[in-house]
Length: 182
Image 1: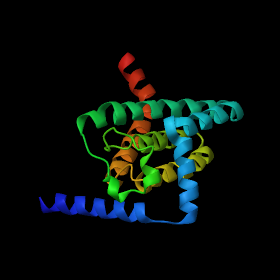
Image 2: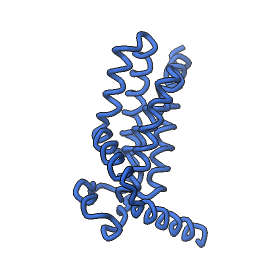
Image 3: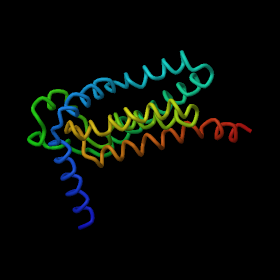
Image 4: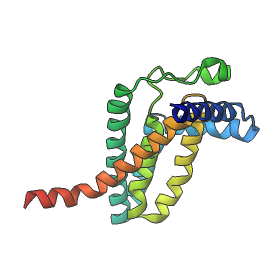
């Protein structure tokens, strides 16, 4: 049990450090990233741009990204949050202005991070340059979720893992369906 207690203590310590990081740049940029990522707006916009400007590769990348994002949302918000009820970081750790938009749902796992990583990981094999561009805001979304006090680092790590698994599942789905159809 000491390993679990040590991991929980480290998770809490990292959360407090991230929340207290008071860089003017961070306080300006991360809220804008969070607003763009809210309700997956950022990823839908990226998909529209890829589909419109990227030809066949862009349309394929957009479909893969949106599909993986959908799977990640179902797994993180529809399954994960229902299976494991975890309180968000304590309100006294969080700045008052960051408490306004804080969700009431379970903290574990981070659905924002799951969607961001799923979209990015599904786009990258199809169109590596677009995947690399998407990786920057995806990592920023993950950092923002901890910095704003909405999640613990372990919530974000689990969301990232769900996102990567969702992208792998979407990538493997056509092959699996062909194999079982024959």
